[in-house]
Image (cartoon, rainbow, N blue to C red; front, top):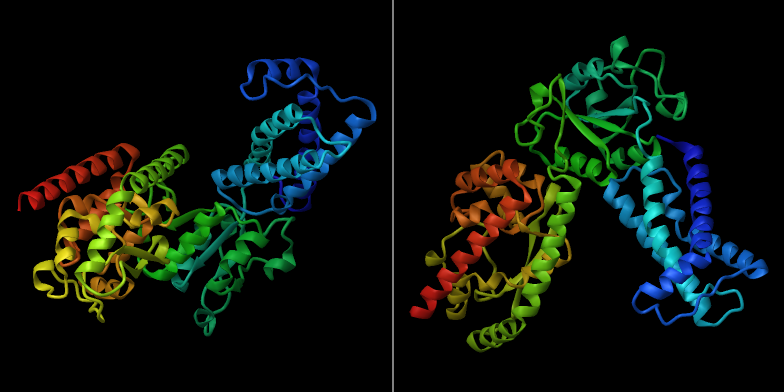
Length: 477
């Protein structure tokens, strides 16, 4: 792939050429005629073809607006393909709005409306494709970074990495009484011409420490890292998931040594000593469909249930003093946190982190019992789904204070962090609660292994049926 200053030059040049091409195509009489004849809303416009000085000004202003709006994409920065596409399209839209502003004020060299819409439409397709294409693999073995807190594991992994090694990141305490790692010759010990020998501070045949774990994001971007090999003592701890999150955010491949791998985290079909970590178990298209499903489900639910939300709010206020909504910090994917809101079902007091059954909790109000039995207290979480902090299906987000207690009973509890938390999930439809963390964990890990859009739909249908059954029981008394 193109890196460094060449990436900046190629990306800018490509944007300029594509912008000029899009405006030229949109300004052609044939495309103008077709667009103003067959496209609704624009079929009342006249064919307007610019020429001479007006065309040159239109081209110059278009290049200035579009190229200027895409400045954040000119810096080499590891990103997932979908992130690159969406960011490029958003920036193209900003450039189009800037050009439309000139038309709003009726400036002399504004683009005709049909030309502007056609040009922006073409650029919304071609520019994202351009940025994805220039980041494609080109046979370069890539740059690899070893990250972890286990010095012995780092020493074992380094000789088995078949690509150029930049160095390694680990806590400084690991280096107090040990020298630099010395990988075997076939492991690759050069950082590559684009990075430079001084950047990696390496001596001949020696792999040096580039800093602590806190520098991971900076190193990924600065050195344009392609692959991170993880070398942690425990694969279910916050540091491991923090490194996974950074790789996921920047579109960097993550690998682990097979001996330290977990069947939840790695691809089942991988062979060799170093195996891929399934940072994104979903195919990119499936991931997009899942997000579309989440947004659609949450939006439709919030609109359809709006009258019920109002009725529940009134009932809560009449039943007991206190706020209508109850907020709590929950654990998100990769160990992050977010605030989740539910309808208040208990008398406001300091709560214990120890999981309890509803029958044993005397703080639950009369309305609260009904809301819990019918699952209607969960409705406000649809907003968290719409905002992207949750998904419709996934492991249930646990209270951050409760997590510590659950880990004591289920030491591998943090493997649930691998996916975004959900409103419902395999554990919920099988009535596995936090009072039995082992059973809940088994169901959550099974979902992580089996997850797919069809599996999500099956879980949602089952959950909706269970809700209807619970509502029916409550109505019957």
